[in-house]
Length: 70
Image (cartoon, rainbow, N blue to C red):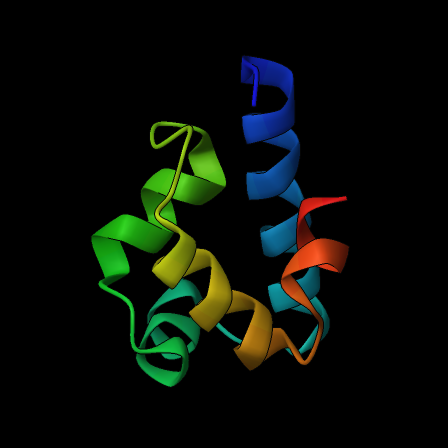
């Protein structure tokens, strides 16, 4: 995953999260991931989130990991 893909992943998560009208804090709680981790993924600071974190985020968004990463 290159820098552009990582940034795209963060932007995609942010866009989908906002579609549910959830704040980062609310979404992080629902997804059971640390708030700081979520914000770092959305801003591209964390470029390669763990598969476990990605899976939790995808599940909370109601989409597959493949769809989230594509």
